[in-house]
Image (tube, rainbow, N blue to C red; front, side):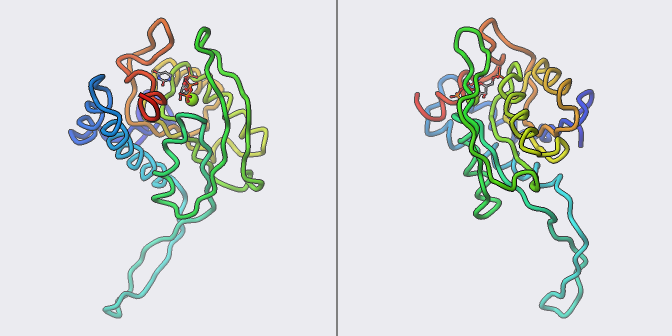
Length: 216
Ligand code: PRP
Ligand code: URA
Ligand code: MG
């Protein structure tokens, strides 16, 4: 389901289970092992939801009871692209669902003073233009990093409608900024937060995702 009023934004069903997971990872007292474990559970849900939107074709098979089953099979090739560093936390969740999936990397860092993104490095699969791309970054705050990464993909020939941007938390203004530039990219998220603080961190948010997953 698309989440109104945001076109092309797919918000995970806000079940008690999901809210419980977010309650743990948003809690400032959660330890790093627990943060990783519960963030990974949300990441798995985001990947599964992203996969739901890929095209399929009809496929009928025979079961062991000699009956037919009218099912479907996945069409097209996919790859992941993580925005380093925090986006790398989502790679394993994608690998758990898509065996030996190709994964590209784009290193973009937000300047700590100005919150402006800077592109340092990109390494992407050669045939990325022929693939559906799962762009991975847990946080969409101002949208600057995601827009810069999406520009890189489009310059490499990826069609916007083939990009699925998977993240754990978005801000409303981040979605608006991103949507204005890339209306055809699908955003798959688990939470839409009310805004940003003076340092351009999401509120209520969870703090610095990369630090909590990798360092603190
Ligand atoms: C964080 C996050 C996003 C970006 C979001 O990365 O992972 O990439 O900020 O903010 P934006 O929407 O305002 O651009 P950061 O640059 O802090 O680096 P990290 O991945 O090393 O934590
Ligand atoms: N990056 C993060 O890790 N958290 C935010 O709230 C914003 C950017
Ligand atoms: Mg980042």
